[in-house]
Structure formats: structure tokens, C-alpha cells
Length: 306
Image (cartoon, rainbow, N blue to C red; front, top):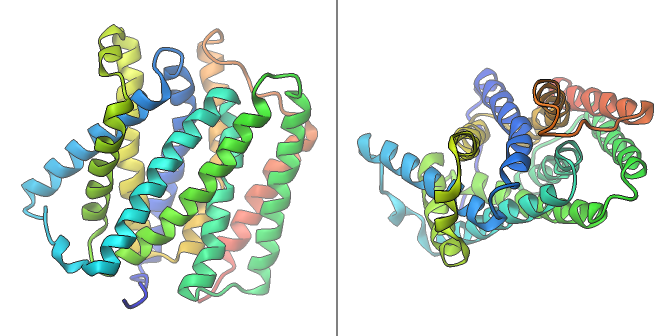
């Protein structure tokens, strides 16, 4: 199977990457609030179900719901890997968010685009200039500084370290999914790949979910749940298309800014509804780490050349 090559439409790739970052920045806040009234498996199952139905309906209306015969044996094996890894990412990340803070979870999950960037270099032959390697080092150092600051602030929080480790695991399996998804673009369009993964994930989680719990939600809780589900469709649709038009390493650099956007979202929700979500306890070292993340991300995405 030939290796996938980006279309070269860098502006479109950047715009889609930025949209993905905005969706993922607000998602941890919505998930944290929704987990107060719904268990993680049911929440994940519902997100995949809605994503499968909406994406499948959109493809069916356009006459594009098919073409899977082109995958071949290796393609189907890669599709199975992608589906399993994305289900693992959703479940591990949600379990991690349940035990830690949205900002910390979003910071740790940035290991995923870092791993995707390195995978893009190793698997797809994408190249980094010296300035980009420096940016990657700044980004990694900034994440470490931010996490150490957060760890000191929440050292007595029950389950905090366990939640952080679950998010690390979510990052690892997501990077595997992302690289598999990019290679599958050689045979299938991004939305056809995603609708299959969504459907498989919804069926796999169905026996472990509790659909009856949805009937106990009020209007505000339903609104949060709907946001979580629609966020899935928009974010992964934009992400998949970004990979079609831009190198995986560049996409990962834009996604690395997501923690700062998440911190802004947490601050906004706390300002509007103080009782619903606690603020993120960030000291000077944490803010320095966040700025290093931004600087490293800018270096990787803006100073590169194929």
C-alpha cells in the first residue's frame, strides 16, 4: 500500500486544524460537567452513536456511503486497529478527566500530537528542520513544567495521579489511531473511514452502556450531552480532513495549542457559573510552561519546510 501524501493545501489544513483545536479545548469542560450525571461508558457510547448516525446520514444523502471493497486485507486490518485505538482513547480519556481537572487532562493529552508528529516523521518520511526540533523540545519542556506545577497544586487530590496516567494511555492509543487513519486515506475518504469507526465503536460499547440513564437527564444536562456528541462529529471530521491536506507533523503543532484554549474555557465557565466548575490552580511556573508550549508549537508549524 502506497504511503499517503498531503494535498498541499496548507491554508485549508491549518484552518481545519484550528477548528479541531477549538472543539477539543471545550470538550473536557463539557465532559467534566456531564460526568456528574452520566457514567463514562454510557456517555462514550452515546457520542459514538450520534456521530455514526449523523455522519452516515450525511454520506448517504451524498451517495457516498460505500466503497469499502477497495480496502483489501491490509486495509481492513488497519481499519480494525484504528477503530480499537479510537475507542480506547475515548474511554481512557474520559476515565482520566473524571479523576483529574479538565486543564490538566487537556495538557497531558498533548502527548498525543507529539507522538503523532514523531510517527509522521518515522512512518511517512516527513522532515523537520533544526528550528522545528528546537520547537518540539520547547513544547515538550513546557508540558513537563506545566504538569509539575499542577501536580504540586493537586498532590492531595484523590485519584489525581491515576487519572493522569489514564490520560497518558489515552494519548498513546490516539497517536496510533491518527497514523492508521492517515494511511487509510490512500484507499478511502476521511468521512467514510470515520463513519465505519463510529458504528463499530457504538456497537462495541452498547452491551456495557446504560441507555435508561438518558431518561433521567434534564434539559440543561441534555444540552451538555448534545454538545459532547456534536463536538465529536465536528472535531474528528475537521481533523481527518486536515490530515488529507497537511502533514501530520504540522497538524500536531496546531493541536498543541489546545491546552491554552482549554484553560480559557475553564476560566470562562467558572466566571459564569462558579459552582459548576473549579478554577485551574496555575502558578507562575505553570504559565511559563504554557507559554513554552505556544512557542514550541509556533516553531514547529511556522518554521518548517518539506
